[in-house]
Image (cartoon, rainbow, N blue to C red):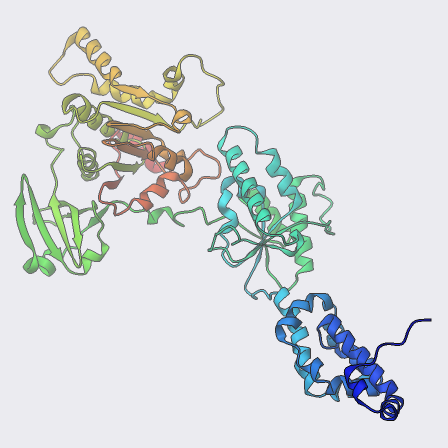
Amino acid sequence: MPLPPAPTRRGSQLAAGDFSAKTNAKSRASAAAARDEQDDDLFDLDPAPAAVAAAPAPRRAQAAAAPKAGSRSKKGAAAAAPVHAPAPVAANAKAPAAAKPAQAARGPAVAEASPLVASKPAKAAKPRSDKAKLFVLDTNVLLHDPSSLFRFEEHDIYLPMIVLEELDGHKKGMTEVARNGRQASRTLDALVASQEAHLAQGIRLDATGQKGASGCLFFQTEPLTYQLPESLPQGKADNQILGVVEALRQRHPDRPVVLVSKDINMRVKARALGLEAEDYQNDKTLEDGDLLYTGMLQLPLDFWAKVGKKVESWQSGASTCYRISGAITQQLHINQFVYYEAPGENSLFARVIEIRDKTAVLETLKDYGHQKNNVWGVTTRNREQNFAMNLLMDPDVDFVTLAGTAGTGKTLMALAAGLNQVLDERRYTEIIMTRATVSVGEDIGFLPGTEEEKMGPWMGALDDNLEFLAKGDGGNPGEWGRSATNDLIRSRIKIKSMNFMRGRTFLNKYVIIDEAQNLTPKQMKTLITRAGPGTKIICMGNLAQIDTPYLTEGSSGLTYVVDRFKGWPHSGHITLARGERSRLADFASDVL
């Protein structure tokens, strides 16, 4: 039989009769209050509304009047809130009719405690904006741009399981697609490792420091029920992704669910099934190729009438400089060419060399169309070619981009300027030429020989232009003279493959990158960052002849560098407009 508990300090000060009388009168009430107080001390929380409503009447009165239960700190209640996570569900549920008056009679203590418990789920379940969309990404989007996960701003991203399977199948190899697949896998691994949240609850896209993405990334963690037409094979990966989009649309009827794919046929099938589909647009520098920076600006016919009184002019060597002001200076960039042509008036061809506040300084150009200013026997034939030659021959311009249709003279002018500065002026030590090896048709297989011999079939344009440049400018030099000139030119021109460019540094080299429209922005960055001190890089391409899959005029690497280098004092761009190859080539470019 257990021993009776020891008397308390207060009990030892009372008389025996008083102690027994008070104990007999309030035995049940004090025992109930002690149990309530002991429970409160154990959990450090106010009783849940449902529990208080179900308690006997004396106990409810004691719980409402007890100062200890009503004076719990908010910190303690918030710390222990996860223990009673189901409590708000019971409180928000419809209570029985008999319990409602009891809850209303709890008093201020209960009314103050219930919002504390109910506020916890509001933090856990963060409401999404009504405008936030759910984008389902196709595999080709991740293979095209591994950073596409962070390009959707406040919207959420959903990755079906078949996308991860396809991503795993494309990560082997040394191609650009394989590298992008590995980078996308590493990005997903970093996102998953950065948080301990369950994958089905979503992963914050800004967890790795990408502040531009405020949405969440969701993975498919359970089978989804959907039904597609019987004409679509169920085992095909594209159709499984379409099925996931259909299931998500049914699961979230009040939220836009959009498929993002670079595959045109898949977007067509999605729209045929009534699903919303879009192309991946964030990789495009420009929405329309016509908005591309041309590098030149035509001055209005009333230009001299507006700024003539405020123009300052002075002589700088063989050139004349003009300082102009007015609203037109807001449209100008450094190294941009301006021209003024009006009937009966003198023409002006100049380049912007300085922009300060609301003024700009224009410098007249050297006329390379005159025979005395020929470059390795080549003279320019139109306005745009003269602009381009001024950039190619300027030692202060380190990066030049030339765009234009076939036959506009891009390769010929770049080679002529390079030979002049390598062999005559000794400004550079040699010419390095490379290009993107993208076939127009089917590949012919592996090629024998050294690196330069393997690149030989891709350098037909170089051979054709060298044949023209090696004719000599002093009459007929004879067979021996032409042979010596060819050997000298060949000794100063190196043909390199882009596959072996990483890690190299070019010192005092004249680098020509041909067919640059077939390069991605990442490949273009790899090539341009090879430049060391004293190196000049020329990028040439025709945006109308893109052969690389998934590249368009807006997402090409050539468009990317033209837009990013615009306005840099040591770079320049010109879009060549008129072909000079032959009348047949010009007519074919217009009508075909």
